[in-house]
Length: 126
Image 1 (tube, rainbow, N blue to C red):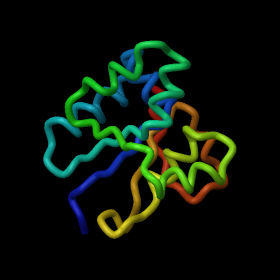
Image 2 (cartoon, rainbow, N blue to C red; image 1 turned 180 degrees about the vertical axis):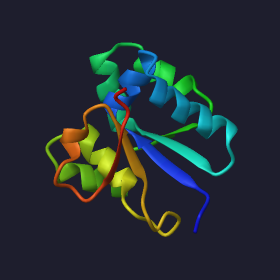
Image 3 (tube, rainbow, N blue to C red; image 1 turned 180 degrees about the horizontal axis):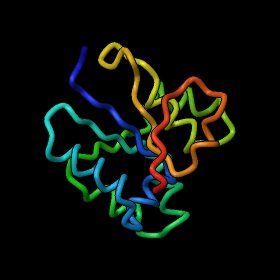
Image 4 (cartoon, rainbow, N blue to C red; image 1 turned 45 degrees about the horizontal axis):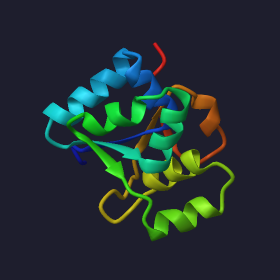
């Protein structure tokens, strides 16, 4: 059993973090202060969050402990098959990999968005 935690923020979690959401803030703190905690912000979701709440991109990029995931070729190919870039990039980032066989948990303020998909979700709503 691994002591690691991998969490991917979707755009709604990023906006919530910018508004002082306690759960999102706690995740950011854990990723910064706790060994084995990893927090990811897919670039497409960062863009969507900034469209919703201007300034969010700079806020997320400035936080220690958050890794902004670029839209590399494999991610771009996965995103191209979907209708929404932000959600598709988040889902791609949360998928299992060799380094993360269990994948990652998606932190979201819109948990219904992920209903019916094979992803693990953490609702950041209070």
